[in-house]
Image (cartoon, rainbow, N blue to C red; front, side, top):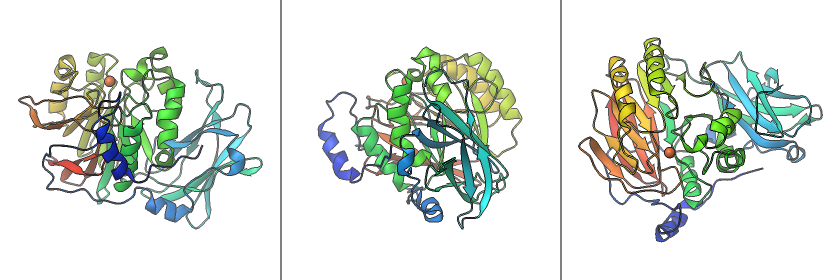
Length: 412
Ligand SMILES: [Fe+2]
C-alpha cells in the first residue's frame, strides 16, 4: 500500500518528450512561455507535517492486510476534519487518535462504517474529529483493538477567515490513468508548499470505476492525501460508472446536493464547486444563493467543463450563459475548469478571471488562441495559487517543475 512519488522527474520528463506519439502521453514541458515574472514559492508541502509528527504516515506492517485504502482527509475546517479509509470487511472497531506533535492526546474519534457505499466489498470507514484549534498542526493515527494501525500522520487545520498569512492551493484536472505523465507531474507536486488540493474533474479514467479510483487516485496520491485536504469536482469520465456512484462512495463532500455540487470555506477563500454533468440552471440558482451567503473576500468557483476554452472541446456556451450573471453579481475573481487537456488563461471577462487546467496527466491536446485568450499551452501541468489579502497569484508549473505562466489577480 505504501506509495512513493517518483524521484528524478526532470530526466524522466525529458525522456517522455520523445514519446509524444504514444497513447495518452503528453507534453511534460511547456514549449512556449507566458508571463513568468512572479515565480512561485518553492518547498515541500509535507516538510512541516512530517517534522512535527515523525514518519511519513506509512502503515504499520500489521495494518497492510487490514487497510485497503490508506487514510485521507475530507471536510477540513478550522476546528474539525473527517478521516476516511477503506478497511477489510469485518476488520472490527477502529479509532482515530489525534495528538499534539509532542504526543499529548487531544481527542479520539470512533470510526463509523459507511452503510451508504455501493461499490466496495470492503468497509468504508469515516471518523469525524472536532474540537481542534485553527491553523494548527496535529498528528493522527488509526488504531484498532490490537494497537496502532498507522504511524502518526501530520495535518494542519484550516486557518480562520481573518488569518493574515498567504494561503497556498494546488489545482489540477484530468489527471489520468496512472501513466508516466501523471507520475512525472506528481513528482513536481512535492516542490510547492500547498495546503489544499483542488481537482477540476476526470479523476479516474476511463470510466470512473472503483478500481480506477483506487489505482489512479488513491494509490497515486496517497502520500499527499494522508496529510492534505483533497476537494474534487466530478467530470464526465467520473460519471461513466453507475452515474458517478464510485466518486460519491469514496468522497465525503459537504452540502445538500448528494455530493454533486458543494461549497466550503478555507481561510479567506470561499470555494464553490459545480458538477457540469448536472443541471446548469439548478446550479446557477444554487450558486447565486451560496455566494450571497458568503462574506469572505475571495470567491473561487471550479468545475469540469469550461465556460471559456480554445481547446479540443471548446467553450461550453450554455454553462457560460448560465453562470455569467451570477459570477458578475457576486464579484467572483476566479473560475477554474478542466476537460480540455491543456492550460489556458483568459483575459478577465466582466471582471472574472478564467483558467483551464486539464493537464494533470492524461495526455495533452492542441490548444489555440481565441479573442479571450491571454496565454495557452499544450502541456502537462498543475496550477499553484498563492492567495494573499489583496492579490491572488496564479502560477502554472509543468511536469519538469518549470513555471511557464503567472498572473496576479486583484481582489476587487
Ligand atoms: Fe472531461
